[in-house]
Image (cartoon, rainbow, N blue to C red; front, side, top):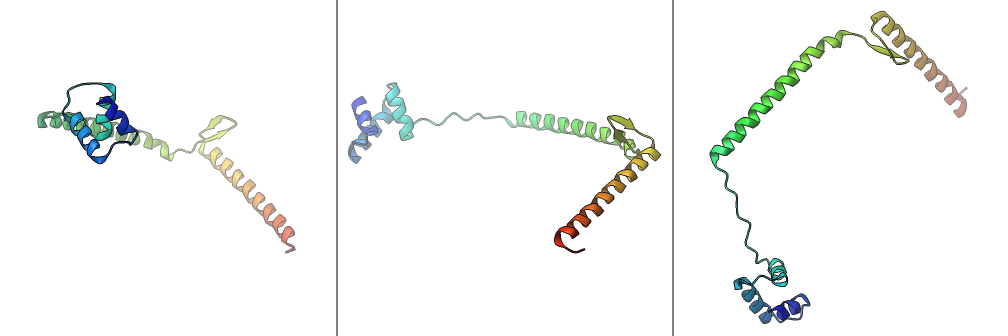
Length: 134
């Protein structure tokens, strides 16, 4: 049988010889690496045993997952509402220092907008010079 398996892998068996080898491998109880490999290649391995999980176990797993989801959701919602009080506060960082005075934060915001506006005007004038619009 081992010689026939070697011929099978070398594609040197006729169709009839291959059928006979397939039948022989299917019924033999001999275990050998070459025979096991031929079984695998020919698809003659027994399918893996199915694991049957009872409905009772599935129900318990489902209930546990639902409880975990409710707990996680509750924690998330409570954190969201406890941090929502921060939404009405203005916070800025200047050189790594936290600034919470709302008037100071708005002054810094307006100053930054002014700087950006000046930069946009400068870029517009440079662009106009480049295309010869002036």
